[in-house]
Amino acid sequence: MRRYPIRSFNRAKRGFFTVSSALCLAACGASEVDENAALQATAASDFAATVKCNTPSSTRVRIDGGTFIMGSNAVYAEESLERETTIDGFWIDPHEVTNGQFAKFVEAAGYQTVAEKPVDPAQFGVPVEQIPSFMLQPGSAVFTPPHNPSRNYSDWWEYLPGANWRKPYGPQGPDARPDQPVVHLAWDDMHAYAEWTGGRIPTEAEWEYAASAGAEKYTEQPDPRLANSWQGVFPIVNEGSDGFKGIAPVGCFEPNANGLYDMVGNVWEVTADYYRAGHDPADQTNPRGPSENAAYDPLNPGFTSRVMKGGSYLCAPNYCQRYRPESRQGRDAGLGASNVGFRLVYDSAE
Image (cartoon, rainbow, N blue to C red; front, side, top):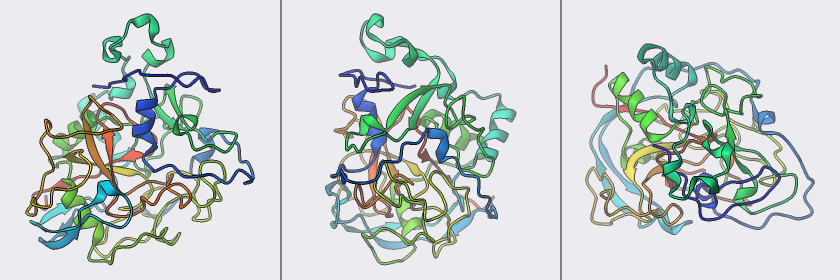
């Protein structure tokens, strides 16, 4: 179910957008933008990739159980405390779930995603006359860069009617490419796909263990060969020196030591854990996060958030440092976005 809590509106060039939803979508910590930076006004569809890469195999990758240091004390408070964590073994998708894979599920199951359905006005919790009519139409949240320097997340997130997994940049933009990560999905959509395939959404600990792959922790922006992140001044100057200004097809960047692609950057990946800032230092063996009652997302109060991991192509050093395995933020379970995807884990090889 999508939820759109209305507390205030931003009367920007694109009309209304809920600040609380924008906070959940921004998914990075704000910082000063260089006011003297050259402006780069672009439309959402300008971020569509045209480059093709060799799509890697979809064969499940075995991750043997072990112990690692989960979390980070180096950057954001919600990633701490670092603690030794033990994980049982599992299998995991080598790359994000793609549009092509999701399309097979939709066709077989006759499934319709949350973003493709009209919005129930009751979800807003306010009189219907206070709700902008376009926000009752089927759609999703799309990154659209502002024309001027800004550090206000509501300036670059737009609720766009007609945006969904088939049309990730909106109804006037290009169709979804089969080899790119599927986006604009709510939790219910991801869970339905997982049940159909026989997999499950990974716990945060499983995801971070697989993403870390025994490497040393870092805070710097990854080499452009290793991850799809933002080069330039976010959110207006996107140099695309890694070859992409938006989402890249799976397999375009080098895998980690576990043979997994895009665990950092490209799109955020949703996990099964409910979100609460920080880690419980006593929860050290196969942790599954807080209970739903104990969870709390200060950027989405009163609503259920899940933990998402790894950052996206929207992370730049002047705005955030979330292109790391330890990075985590809350994800509104009822609302999709153009930079959020997922992958599955499994309890058997087949």
